[in-house]
Amino acid sequence: MRYPQGGGLTAEQQQFRVELRGQAAERFARGEPSSAIAKDLRVSVRSVQRWRRALDDGGPRDLRSRGPALLPRLNEKQFAQLEAELAKGSAARGWEDQRWTLARVKTVNGRRFHMTYTVQGVRKLLMRNGWSCQVPARRAMERDDEAVAGWVKEVWPCVEGSRRPVGPGWSSRTKPDSP
Image 1 (tube, rainbow, N blue to C red):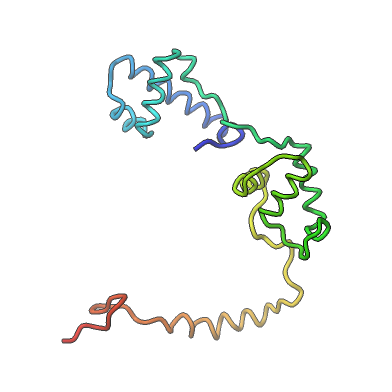
Image 2 (cartoon, helix red, strand yellow):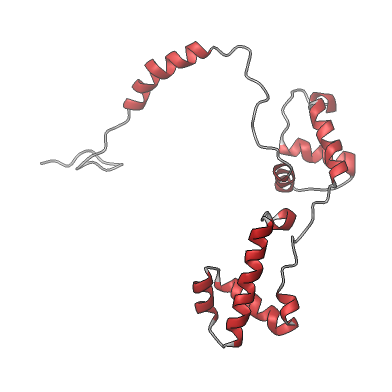
């Protein structure tokens, strides 16, 4: 899996990956099998095979990481503009409620920047920039914390305790075994 911004790794972690590939290259020269190298370096055999192929095709230079597969298509300025649009609320863009769904963000992005993203691409774009899913900005005005606490103390134990018992002689689909 590829990750944005240098693989989501710190400089130390990137250096560790470079050293792993260097160790693998040394072991390739000694003729060791890919499976043994993968086991010792704690990476997948496919990664070792890919490194071996890169080393054979282009030498040590091709063994280096090429960085992220695809840089984000929206630059920082454009994403700031998208955030400003999201801050206005979805009702300002013509929807009847204030919910921002991924499909709606996709639509706004397409209309504003003329870029097509998939719904999952929009999710990744938002997550990459610090947004999370389904987090309300504030609590509902109608919320009664005392009533919630009372429900948790009084009602929830009854609901939780009403499950069918499972023990010796019981299975998830049958009644207890007859003696």
